[in-house]
Length: 308
Ligand SMILES: NC(=O)c1ccc[n+]([C@@H]2O[C@H](COP(=O)([O-])OP(=O)(O)OC[C@H]3O[C@@H](n4cnc5c(N)ncnc54)[C@H](O)[C@@H]3O)[C@@H](O)[C@H]2O)c1
Image 1 (tube, helix red, strand yellow):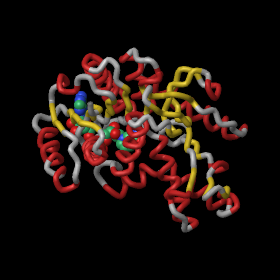
Image 2 (cartoon, helix red, strand yellow):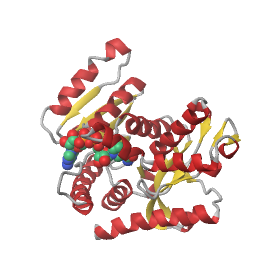
Image 3 (cartoon, rainbow, N blue to C red):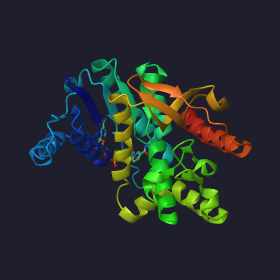
Image 4 (cartoon, protein in one colour):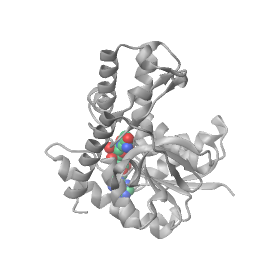
């Protein structure tokens, strides 16, 4: 039987992800949104690309959670963007409500599913999903690190004129201004970047990575990134559905790893058929450890604002 994947939220990130999943051709995909008819229209459009691109994935658009029943993986991208006059805390509370409602429905119809959260603020929304679902932490993951790392890898590859495939990197921490790109461990075909790029230039690239989302928001003028975010969520789904056991930087609910407890923070994690299979504990320098704890502190502040 083919796997079943649901994507909640058929906006920019959600619908681009559904298209990418359909092209992978290993699962049937359900796209849910509250806007009437819109997911149905997008799904029909994608189905009709199948004969041209050669995929048989059944893509269904719906406004009814019953259609999502028994999904193996559910990716949650539903949420509101920040509107003029809205504070970050207002947005946080609005999306908290949405994620709580969405999670209740997801759990009702797919009690054994693995959830991948995408909605921002990412680490806080993953926290909501974990607590509302009552799932073990192995089945609630957050997507941010793959994207932040991809941005870092892109800039490094451009800087040295290398293939992006040869650039290995990790960005840890929360998804925000306090993320921690581990430049010490970044290599190009095994060569540490410190041997290839001057220190001050690495610092500039680290800063550009931190501002990666904002740079795109500014250029777009309306909306935020979705091509790289959907590709990043796809890689996590791949590793789970195909049981590839890839080690991907993911937001994980930590229970003592890295000295952090009861918070979602981005760390290297092995993902497979069971969801989270292992948290990889990399030895960090004192400075890196301090930066990671500062990042966890920023996540904690959001959790406090949500009253959780
Ligand atoms: N984690 C990351 O790295 C990352 C990267 C990019 C975007 N994001 C986040 O992903 C989210 C989606 O971004 P987007 O560009 O696709 O936004 P979007 O506005 O295009 O799409 C959001 C969709 O959610 C739907 N929605 C709203 N309330 C809903 C509900 N209760 N149930 C179901 N659907 C509902 C809306 O109708 C809309 O179609 C945002 O929160 C964004 O900040 C996260």
